[in-house]
Image (cartoon, rainbow, N blue to C red; front, side, top):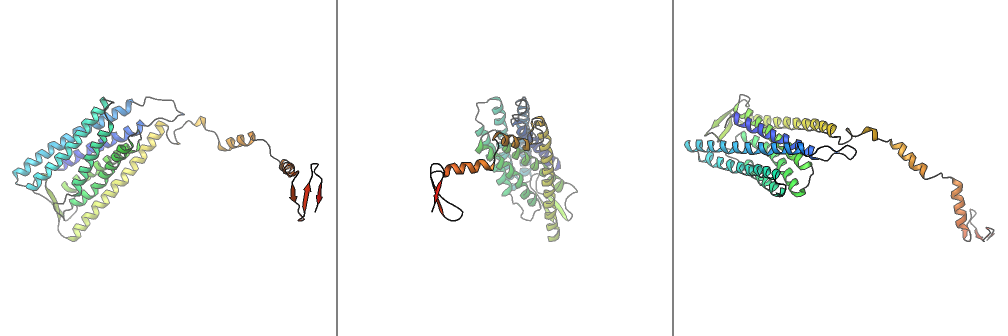
Length: 322
């Protein structure tokens, strides 16, 4: 497939995830203490670019799969040809999802649950494809495909949340956007690690056809070293995603006034002053008032004095000791 194919797929997924995250953060309603802005302009544009990028990327995946399929047929590679048919089927599901999303934007009466259901099926199909892909059990590319299951599952989980909630919550879209960005970064990393000189030392690439390849290593030390390098690279990508999410979230909070950093400071009231106002409104309290209240309640009743005797109170408050 080549490095350019992986790079193009990674760039498209990063673009999709970025616009998905932007659409989710700008769709949220502004705080009540801030003036209302125009919430519909930016989310609609971001969602349109998201679905447009998804449709274009899905079409390119289908085109690339067809080219790889005919190359596998010419190379008499049955495994490669069958594999490319699976990739084309998955890309067709994502193309249907993106076209349905564009239709949803133009028609508000179109059910959004159907869109989320198609997206859920597409991510499940993609997850199962990479989970069951084991052409060569000792190939280093299997380690990269195992790591790819993590961002795919994040996208699947975000779509499942959106399908179940079916609300305007920003969390499902944000989760799916982060998963798409991580998936795009990992596609780019796979292209670098498989088709460039950045491949682990002691390992070589062997191709049976354009879409059927494996990475062989000389021995067990090189094999375990290459697997460890793949795991380290994925951890670095996770750390990069965390830094990007925190940075973007802080910028969005400052601009939208969400959270505690961008609110209206002039409306802030100290907690001590508010509590003092509540205490003053309840009046003054003295110990004498409490004792007098107890004395009034004790009139006409029998109470026990400190010495242990009983005192019977009459109406005038005079009692007889017993």
